[in-house]
Every structure is written in structure tokens, then in C-alpha cells.
Image (cartoon, rainbow, N blue to C red; front, top):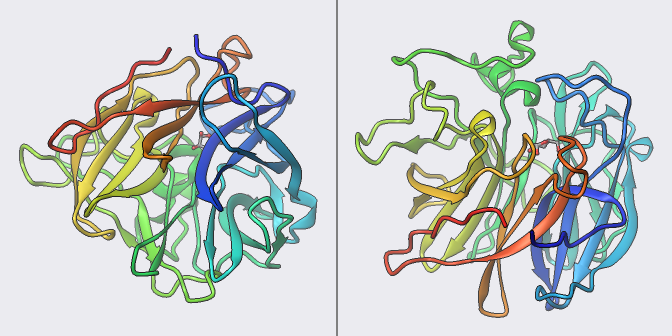
Amino acid sequence: MSPPLITHIYTADPSAHVFNGRVYIYPSHDRETDIKFNDNGDQYDMADYHVFSTASLDEPYDVTDHGVVLHAEDVPWVSKQLWAPDAATKDGKYYLYFPAREKEGVFRIGVAVGDKPEGPFVPDPEPIPGSFSIDPASFVDDDGEAYLYFGGLWGGQLQCYQGGNDKFDASWVGPKEPVGADKFALFPKVARLSADMRKFAEAPQDLVILAPETGEPIRADDHDRRFFEAAWMHKRGDTYYFSYSTGDTHYLVYATSKSPLGPFTYGGRILEPVLGWTTHHSIVEFQGRWWLFHHDCELSKGVDHLRSVKVKEIFYDKDGKIVTEKPE
Ligand code: FUB
């Protein structure tokens, strides 16, 4: 079994970026709770974020914990559940994007701003206007245009917005999603970010994922391939790779496009299921190699909400397809 990168606390949902020649990791900070497990994810009851960094991804690991960079109590609109974050930089500032439940229990996405990649980060007093659901992933393209990808089913509430981005339908709260061979899957959302990185520049739109064999959107019943949560975007050459978790089938998979807005075509699996219910990742190029950051529950011996971040090198074949990895 490969060792976790971080062992002194539980960490999950790692978003990795290379800033100033170092790899910075922005994970969730898992903690013990006495909350009963359920399919709504209530047991994932995290209250703060740490940032980590390292100059090398080879073993033995030497990872710096920069400490708590944001606490739920520092964010006026948050009630609980600081879930998977991400970070971006533009014009010398650093932006931490994070989902959490507001006081009424609805997930929104917030932003906090800092001067250094390791924080500290000062949160905006309100969530990003028009934001909803979970798992924000930021991507700044070569032309400087910045995007936020987000969404998650079941506890992540994406299924509550089928009538439009601003229409929250409480009857869909819980571990629910569309069912039926004739129905298309729900898709993650993407929105361009404003120049100051703190707002959406446009209404979020669906990031459509097509089945390669039909050219049609992935179907709702196709749980091996439909989007569940854990959005991530990376670019290799002129190809955009959108990757995500399939949730209840526990795969990390990807789809490709020549545009950051899609449509994307399903490409295959990145990682087979790990120990633990969730699987969540990021992909980054560092020192000429490509790395998959992910998590599993080996350190906690299988406790689903006590996860640990790991890293492994990934490879592309001559056609740009990602070679499927097995947990190790
Ligand atoms: O960590 C809480 C949630 O679990 C994340 O937001 C999901 O992606 C899943 O990993």
C-alpha cells in the first residue's frame, strides 16, 4: 500500500496546484464526529481548511502543513460542512473556493482571498451570487480566462436545480437523482469567473458529457459514467480533460474536449475504486510528470469520512488517453 502524503490529520478531496515552483495542496480536513452515517453525507462534517505544500512528490514525502487557513466560524454565511475546496491565482492574489451549507441548509460556494498560496484567506461575507451545490474546481486557461466548475448529486444538492439555476426544489433534497433509461444524466455546471475572480461573469451552464458510441448525452441510468461529484479540469496540449467521480460506482473518470465549456466526450477511467465510499482527485503537471492526487480510507482502516490524501504518477498513451490506474 502506498503511504498517504499527510498522516498527522485526516485529509481528503485534494486540489493540487503548482505555485512558485512548489506543489500546494488544498484538501478537505476530515474529523471524527458522532453523526450517524447516511447517504446524504451528514457525517462529512468538516469545520476548517489547512493548506499543505511540498517541493517533491517522490518518497519519502516531506510535506509542510501551513496550518488552519480558514475556519467555518470566520465565514458569516456558513452553518456547517466545509466540503471540497480549490484554489486559483491571478494578478498576484490567491483565491480559495469552498462549498458549505448556509444557515438554511442549502449548499453555496464561497470565496476567500489571500496574498500567498498558503493563505491566510479572508472570506467574502456572502457566497458567490448565483452559486449552488458543491465541489468547486477553478481553472485559469492559457489566455487568462478563468472558469469555475462545480456540482454534486445526492448530499451535494445538484438535483435540486432541475428547473433552472435559481430554482431550489426541496423535494429533491437527499440521496436522489433522475432515474430511467430514457432520461439524460444531470451535468456539472461551469461559469466564467469575473475579472476579480469573486463572482460569476455569466449564469452557470451545463457541462455536457457525451457517450462516444452514440454522440448523445450520457444517460441517467449509466452510473458507471454519469457525473456525480468531484469536478476537475486540466489541459494537456490543446485538449481539455474534465474529470470527476461517478459516486455510487466509485470510479474516477474523464472526458475530453477542445473547449473548456464543452461539449465533452467520455474518455475512460483514471482510477479504479479505492477503499472508502468517496473518491475525489486532482491532476497536475509538476517537473515534467503528470500526477493524480486522490484519497482513500486505508489509514482509518475503512472509515468512510476519515480519509487520507495520496499521490501517484499517471500516464497518457500516444492518443492522449489516460492509462487506468489501480489503487496500491
Ligand atoms: O468531502 C466531502 C465530500 O465528499 C466532497 O465534497 C465530495 O466530493 C466527496 O469527496
